[in-house]
Length: 232
Image (cartoon, rainbow, N blue to C red; front, side, top):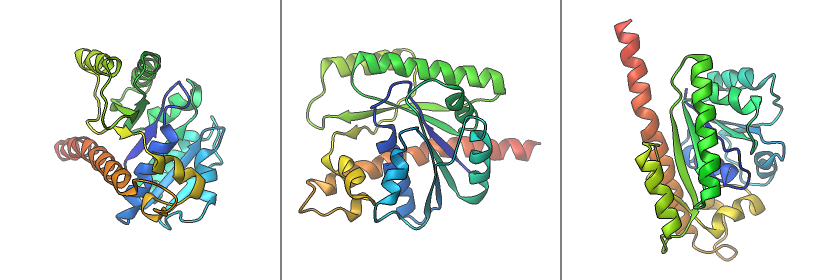
C-alpha cells in the first residue's frame, strides 16, 4: 500500500499541515490511514489528541531512527495508506523513511531559501535511491501561497524547478486560517465551526484538489508495478 513521506531539511514549511490535510481528506472517503509522527515536536500527536480525529485514522508516535523502517512496513500491512511526517532536518531517520516511500512530498514556500533546502531534500532522495537500488518518486508542493498574488520571486523559483525537470504538484496549498485552526481545534476541515474560522469551504476545496492530485500521482507507479509483476 502507498507510503507517502513529507520531508524537508527546513522546518516551518508546512509538512505537518499538508500531512494532516491529506490524511483527513483520504479518511473522509473511508480509507484507513496510518500516520507516523517522526517529528520530535510531535505536531501530529498533539493534533490527534484533540476531538474529531477520524476513526479510520491512527497516529503512531513511538518511532526512532532504528525502528522507522519496521514501523512503516508494519503500518503498510494494516492500512491502505501510510503517511509519514518527518523532522525538519536531514538525518538518518529521514533517509530511512524516504527509502520506503512510494512518494516523497517536499513542501516549499515561495522563497529562495526554501528552494535551496528543497534541493537538499532532492539530493537526499537520490542518495537513498543509490543505496537501496530503487526509484523513489518525489514532487514539490508549494505551501502558504497567495490565492490572488503571484510574486516574481515565486515565479522565478517555479521556472527554475521546471528548467531542471523537478516534478511539482499543480495544486498549491494556499495560506488559510482554516489550516492553522486544525491544530487549535482538532479534527478535519469539515468539522470546523464557521463562526470561529473563516473561508472553510475554500480551504476544503483546496485540500481536496491536493489530495486528488496526490492519489493521481501515485496511480502510474502502481500500474507500473502491476505490469512488472505480470511480466515476471
